[in-house]
Image 1 (cartoon, rainbow, N blue to C red):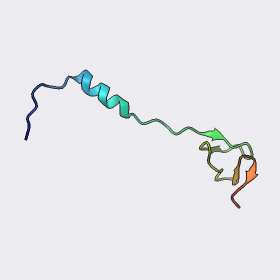
Image 2: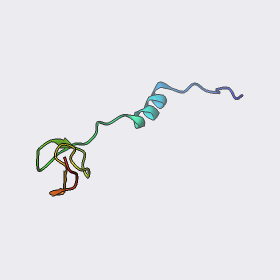
Image 3: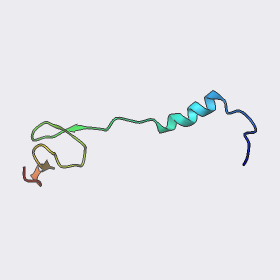
Image 4: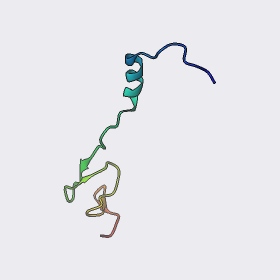
Length: 57
């Protein structure tokens, strides 16, 4: 098994880990009921998508 030749600096390690940060989900308002929903998804509260009823609630 290989051994570490040089110590990885804090800056190198932290800059590598900074690429994997978690971002909060993007939410938009439903035009029908004004609930927060993910974009390009049918609203879970009223069932509308693109001003059309797609899911019966």
